[in-house]
Length: 189
Image (cartoon, rainbow, N blue to C red; front, side, top):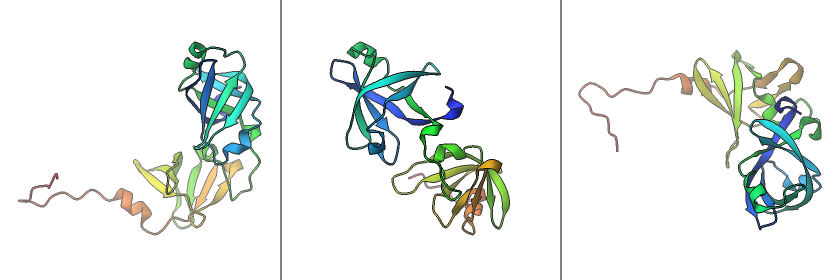
């Protein structure tokens, strides 16, 4: 299994108890969907290593207490702290053209209805209030709000993300920061 055909499920945050249990942070919308998780890939030194799940107990705040086969001591569990968790892409349900998984659009070309081709998706920032798609445009990072009126859908086969950007959004990122006028000092407070 390689990173190319997997998605990141989350990561291991800490140990739990003294018998090798660990705490997973599940970076997903619906953690309860994983209460029957049978196995997971753990990234160790850049390689994805499969582990079977003996027991998983979903907690609040996207956390789960997990007992993995072959991890029977706190020392073995400590070695897994901060390791990323992965699952194969085929574990995900198929989505129609109006919906997409954030990890799948990295590298997609952003095409606006008015402006045409803009740039490539770099990543998606998941924020408490508004998720943002980061696109590289003319050497600047431009953040696109994830909103049904703005993000219209994807063309997976062509690796295209179709958008309808609000007028002036691009200009905000391209305008230079104003310089203090001659004779005025910049207020640094």
